Amino acid sequence: MSKRYKISHLSDIEPTPCPCGFSRRAFMDDDNEIASIHLVDIKKDSQTHYHKKLTEIYLVLEGEGQMELDGELFPLKPMTTVLIRPGCKHRAIGEMKIVNIPIPKFDPEDEWFD
Image 1 (cartoon, rainbow, N blue to C red):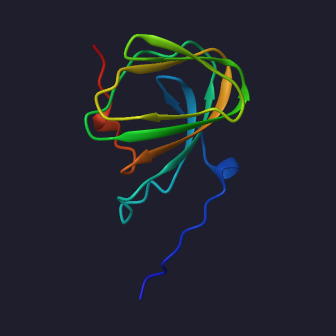
Image 2 (image 1 turned 90 degrees about the vertical axis):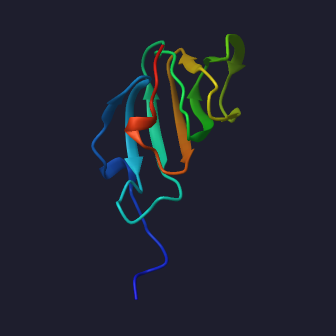
């Protein structure tokens, strides 16, 4: 019987470049399709993108900036949360550290740019 839990230490995961900066992605295993969790260092104004299948939940941990959602700008500060549904064109603006929870698990093939 396989274990019904997983534990990950985000600080032990090598950062991966992403449209927002760098992301440490946990629970990206082949046997998990439910969700993943990412610790993202947003170091630049990120590139506008969207997902056809993913819903994302952002939680701002550090820093301040803005979130562009379908062309509208919204202020971000620590403890702000954002739910981004499939098809919503989005990008973060400013230097921040966020937690991103993609549902289902993040799929790099579901990252679209215009």
